[in-house]
Length: 194
Image (tube, rainbow, N blue to C red; front, side):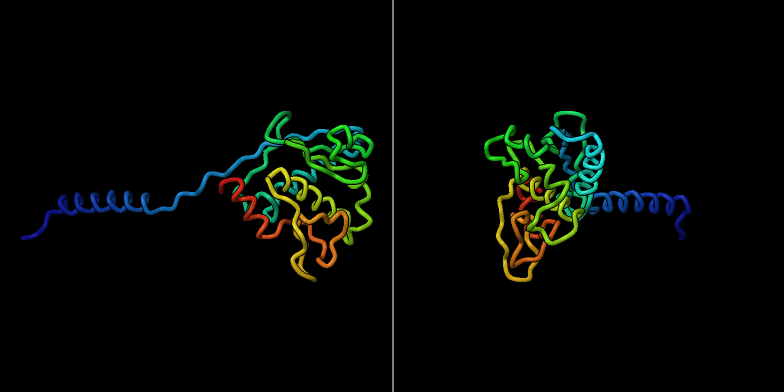
């Protein structure tokens, strides 16, 4: 006795429904992307410096080598407020943020990441690399403080410097490095609960 075509159709339809349900359960769910909102502010710097600063900050924050942690974190620029503010400030305005900030270096105070325009414009005499790499490093370094990372020492001679090393004051015996090391990225991920 044969099986009717309508019987096979019902069986086939049921098998497809079960298979679709199993695949939806077995399919790994992607973790939601964490968003960090930032705004950009300026104190005592020329308008000419402002647009190039904003563009570079966006490039650094979008780069998968940095604190975006291969896309797990998305930095979103907002007009005001946000989770933190990144400043480009003239050297003589640095102390207006805190007595911890000096006219010579960049700093981070609470939710303010402050890049010293003197360093932004000419780099550091102790940095042995190009200016774009220096600017990348200083954005990553000061933002790393906002993400809860402390200063880090050079691990061994010839290694790339941790981005949280005070590279503006020298990198020896490490080599200059603009991007967070894997260990630093792991610390940031843990701090962010990722």
